[in-house]
Structures are given as structure tokens and as C-alpha cells.
Length: 391
Ligand SMILES: *Cc1c(COP(=O)(O)O)cnc(C)c1O
Image (cartoon, rainbow, N blue to C red; front, side):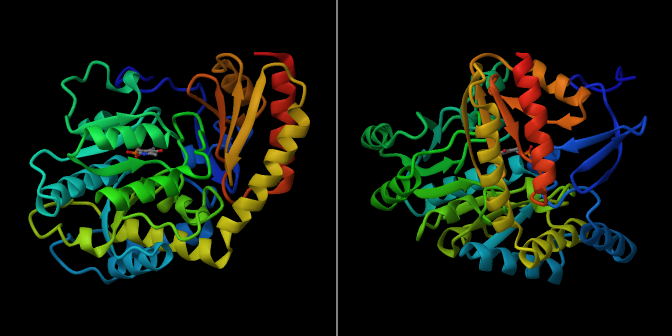
């Protein structure tokens, strides 16, 4: 009975009732291998004992007080995130879109107050995804997501992804640009990896023009790509602003905006806020996630499992006509096919494996960071069989 739910999702005909690690069980007791993690959310897997315990304990102690009061738990998590990222200050919110919305507001403040620009612009990229609030869908580089919601929020300048020459040309034509918002790897856009020089090149352009480098690490952050944050694949590179969400709470809603203090200090009381953002329950979950990821070195594990999974996929899928490219970083993987691939999701589900297709023809794999080699083998074998059967 879905008639009382708004029709915003094309839902698959399955409901899960229980999970453990990389496994989920449906109402009939059938078991599924989860190679999607609720779209890069449950990096520690389902029902992780450390997260479950933190949430239970916190719920029995204190769920919410308000940002009107100090929260030592929030201060500690912020300090940990800053120590891990090299950034200085954190604002907590509840989702990726909210984190990006806050980043966009911060960039505009920077434009007005530091750069003295009357109408500050933010450079964004084709194929990007930044969320579904009005400002973040306006920043998103996908017409389908914007269609029907015009007038869009103004103040965005668009560039092709992975094309520094195009960015330089836009810089010359738009003296009002004050920031760049970019995903280190485009997720929804089809697991598109930039060339090695793209992010360092953007950093250089940002330094030269006085722009903020703002990384949307909502999907790439929290160990997903094999480093704690996607930008850490580039020696010496540091963003000015970074957003996190998805993997941060392992399923408990939490987002975060991080920034260098010179920028973060522009947010003074009255400029931004959130009723729920950084509440005790979500903070307890995120602290448990972070502590576990550090103790078990899950980013490094994701790097190893991801490399091995890519290798196994290349071997198993070699010679299959529809397979154009296998790519990825850590446990963020894409298999680009020669034609639309949506139907493979249901066929994988029938075989008890959860995968996703994005950008029409890219199979996207986002297994939990705790994925084992045996689980990787099962995933690869299932995909091999399905792709041999054809699309
Ligand atoms: C998922 C995603 C968002 C939006 O996050 P929500 O929590 O759904 O609002 C923003 N940016 C990127 C890169 C994402 O993958």
C-alpha cells in the first residue's frame, strides 16, 4: 500500500526487516548481499554493534537539547573531524543537501564580506550532484533534476567536469566567481573520476583568483574512496571548505560543513542554524562511526578491497560485449555499459544482490567498507552471470 506516500521514488518490490554487516533479510527471510550500503551510507555495515550501542545508550540518556546550549559531544566530534581533515571548524546539520546549502551560503558571505563582490558566483560542474533543495539542485549539473522547478537559484557558473582549460576561460569571463564547488569523484553522475591533475589544478586556480575550493565529499567522504576524505589522495592538497553526510552517521541522519577558520569565522550568530543539526543522538552515532573507522583502519581496508574488487571485475567481465569500462576509487566503483542498464538492478535483486544503476548506463557499486573477499567474489560472479545473459 503506497497510495499514501508521495510518488518520489521508483521503489523496488522488496522490504528489508533486518541486517547484519553486508547482509540484509527481507520479510520472507530471503538473504541479500548489500553492495550499495543504502547509497554509501552504511559504511560499517548494518546493525554495527558500536553504532547500535552508542545510539541506544544516548537515547536512554539524552536525545536533544538544542544548539542554544553547549554540547561537549559536538565539540569533541568537531575536533576529531578537524584533526582528520586539516580544517578548523565545523557546522553540523542533517543531510548532504543541507551541508551544501550551508557551503553555498558561506561562499556568498565570503564573496560579500571578503572579496567585496556584489553578486558572488560559484563555479559548478556538468554531471555533478549536490542535492535537491532549491540552491543545491540549482548547483547540480543535471537538467532532469532541475526541470519543473524554475526559476532556479542564480549565481552559479557552469563548467565541463575535468577540464581545467574551460575553468580558466570561465575565470577570465567571470570576475564575480568567489568559489568552486566540486565532487572529488562524481557519484550520481556515473562514478566519474577526474584526471590526476584536475583537483590540484583547481586548487591552483583558486589560489590565483581568491576562490574558495569547496569539496562536496558527501559521497566520497568517510573512507569510501580508500582515504578518510577523497582529497587525501592528493599530496598536500587541502580544500577551504568540505561537506560530509552519507557515511558520517551510518544511517543516523547527520551532515557537516567544515571550513578553514578564515572562512568559517564569517558565520556569526544569526547567519545560519538548525534545530536538529548536531543533536546528541546523531553525534553519538557519528562519533561511534569515526572511532570505529579509525580503530579498524577502514579507509585503508576499503582501498585494498576496492583494488581487489576492480581487479576481479576486470578479469571476470573481460570480453563481455556490453562492458565498456570498469573504474573507481576505493569502494566507489562504476561499470560503464554500452547501453541503458536499469533492468539489471531487478535481476540482481532476484539473485539476492543489491546494486544500483546511475547515469543510465553505469552500474554503481558502493559496498560497505567491511566487505570481505568472499563477498566480493559472490558479487563479481553474480554480475558476471547477469552481464553474460545480456541487458
Ligand atoms: C547524496 C549526495 C548529496 C545529497 O545528500 P542528501 O543527504 O540526500 O541531501 C549531495 N552531494 C553528493 C555528492 C551526494 O552524493
